[in-house]
Length: 388
Image 1 (cartoon, one colour):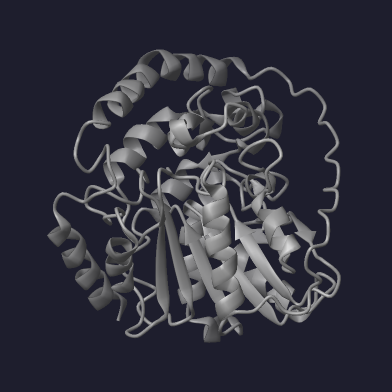
Image 2: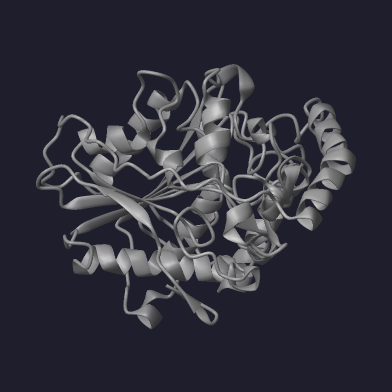
């Protein structure tokens, strides 16, 4: 992958049952890495990767640009556009056999920001990239075409600080526009009562990763103009009924399958085969909460119906993921980054915490219902006009 004047790998883990011809490309969300898809919601449970592999699908869980073992370019090049271009190159490699198997079927599966990227790649003019029909189907989770900006900024961005000042990432020499979540704040990504007590520690130690504020700035207008207005591949939209970032104020109403479908159908080609599923009692990370088996079954059943699981052997026991060598202990954060993070923790975190607590009782912020649905309809109409 090339980003600006830099080039480097897009890293991922490919898991394939014997004979697999259908693959799911898994793209995780903001400040998450590939391990998001490899993590079970509770001890003894199945991760999404394990569930898909047992169904006969190969899976490729990737670290997006600027995360995990993939290229970390200068933040000015860690953009939404470059993320999408990198994922499109991975799709090409899955199709042409560059990764060892030429998969006949590719299903794109995203979470949150990873869903934004997946939908963008699916809706691009692929004639220009010699990759028309990149996906046979897509599944988006923790996503709709309108962002709940108040919650996204108040609960996520306001709870970020400099990655260079976090001990976990101090050795990566990242510039000041790379951020990560402040310690103990990743609970905003799950609905607490639906989360196993073991998950927060795993999230902090293994799943937590980096992102750039440039990426955040370049994705803000992802739906205007709408790049999906001609997209007609089978699509499943999955959200929890406690989704805070892509439902609610100025966004979708996610209180029922039909309400979610009514919102999302406007963003795709007329007559496109779009389906929606709202997972009860669930927050943003639908495959990491206790209700994950419900979400996974709906997602995999959809892929079976519209794309097919191909020739992969079903029911094979989960393999062993390659061991990631323990990195050398990173150096302590530099004094400037450490000082900046202390200031943010002292000044910004209490305000963000207060916003999270207070917004829980505000219509459109503390629930998944848009109190002014006409705004969503108007924005969809405008986005489609601009897109066409």
